[in-house]
Length: 324
Image (cartoon, rainbow, N blue to C red; front, side, top):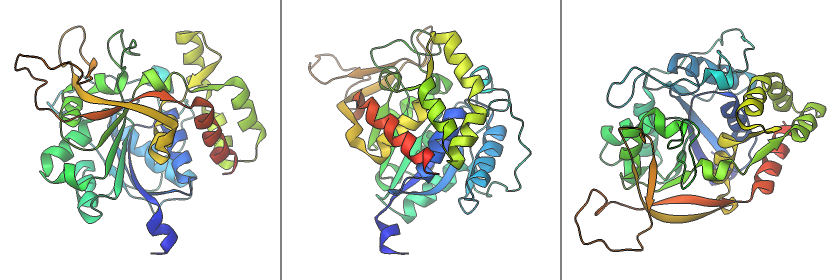
């Protein structure tokens, strides 16, 4: 390993590709600060089987078939099989209804949780796990190895709607809603966690003008993304009446690469696991000492992003995609 390689941040990206996942993966692959050592797959934008196919396809497009893909859980942490799949946002194939031919590659034999645990053991303290979908695989890794939360360097989560409405319903953000029981395990695990919620990512808007700049560029990844963007833009026009899209996953990748793009607060985060507010993320800011013993007591704090330098995030995303 060269000195340059050893200085790079090691990323495992847990992903449910997904149009903005594709964008985020390409941004990570074009980031000189990052060494992507694996992709793990989860349900969310698509079912897990299709997420794996899409992850393998994206690595083939990128010419990075050296990067392993480990398939994740097909069910929630409590074995739930009625999954929320956002094909109406990303297309039935997850990639803008382009129906690309199947990839040549295959997932490795290990499960996503096994792969994540093994890599964290191999590189203790060095790996950033970027979770772009529901947190089932991450929770399974925590359950699989009691030392995992100490071995993993950081867990950067796209998830939560802190003090704003959700995007699945008024209470919940999609990834947390996808497996709230898993999310609660991760938030209370004691790992070094940064949550990048939609309170932040909804400030990072990729406009029609940005899309046109990508289309006019010679970037390989830029051209690919412009081919698949249509469904995603159409959804945003309809759901939010906006002439642009929110960069949820790319903003989270950028925050993992350069934490200075967000400011954070710290506190205990718990997740509502039932009822009409299922998937709600609630941050306790530690400013009041309560007299009663509750399910919030003696829980570890996590970091939650509260502001973002949106122009810087968009510029970093654009630069990497145009120079691809």
